[in-house]
Image (cartoon, rainbow, N blue to C red; front, side, top):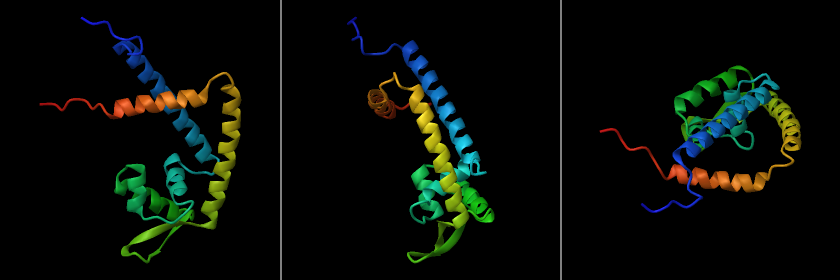
Length: 156
């Protein structure tokens, strides 16, 4: 049996890596919740609002961009409209698919979240002074590409 190169992780190393990345993901989601809370929003509402920050979009296009179910985005969009953060507008390209647009209250919420995010990034960057984040990002991209190219075998 040929010896494996040092760069190839063992199954145990890959599992440990996956646990660390999952923990990082949970931490980042918690930060996202806290940033959304700065604007009295849930994380889901803040994500949907951010999707229309630069231009109005249909619910279907938001769902496609987020790779999630249209019905889930529809519920969140309706909550944003009910809360005065967004409104539905006529879509010149499609009679039935309305555009979700930001209201002034939604814009103010986006501004509060942006300020909270900026403060958090500055604090987190101070804590990462010794880490080579640029190199780490490149390595994580490589792992993501490798994992995306490998899918579990279908059950028979």
